[in-house]
Image 1: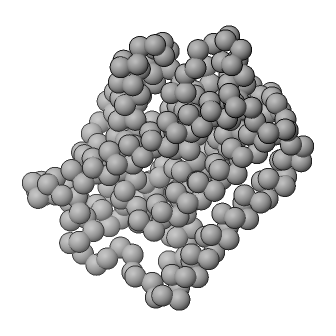
Image 2: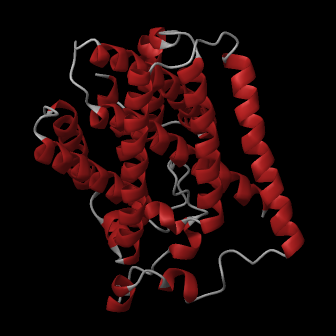
Image 3: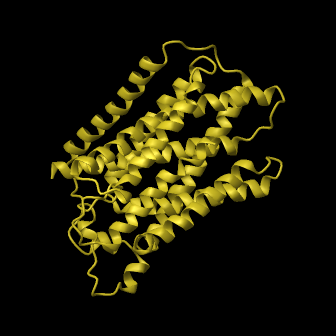
Length: 335
């Protein structure tokens, strides 16, 4: 039941993105999603002027009609940023391994290795398809139409689409290959629609967030794969409670008249608390895959790597979204 909670975080992001787009001139401090008011300042559209068809043909005009959003750094600055980014990722991998992986297990059995590899292969392919589809939807103008739509309609349709396709992919028997893959593709399409507004951010921020996500998830997955059997499976209950708190902190600005301090606390819980919670889910899901691999080898359950990959995919998407938000906030403070 744990994966049923995690799509709500993504849908909260979509709902708030739509709210910002529908109220472009409101100086509201209640925005807690990726699309903060200062980021959308250059994307605001005059309400008295209808959207031109040219915009819907290519959303690239958002970036090319005015001065460039991101200036091109010099070669020395570019190398400096690259070294800092690579050092941060490498340091994270080493630190996580030293802190969490104090007691290692013997090498994985053949069944465990094959099942883990199959699950991560589906995860990688699913994320690749999601990224390509999200980029295509953004270039077609879908992102601005999504942000301009009624947020409650978007939330309702998104909930039905995301949860419906996820449940279908998870609980369709593995023997029904065609239907199971169809649900899996539908799930990735729903995630792509959710993530398409992220391309309003600078490509530099998105690439750094993707690199950090790979470093964090890779190091945590390595720890989960090399730790002793079932070391982190106890974390299921606490992580479920944690993701509930994160979801409620994301919803709080919508339902409660919080002050500035309350909004800052809720946003910090949603960002940094969510980062810790979904990092814990990577450890939990990795060891759960290994546990299921041993059960598959014993003939207790059928092999279902698609079902296993959905949890990992949601973990990575949620970590990526929060890293994009954190990097965007950091970049705005430097201006």
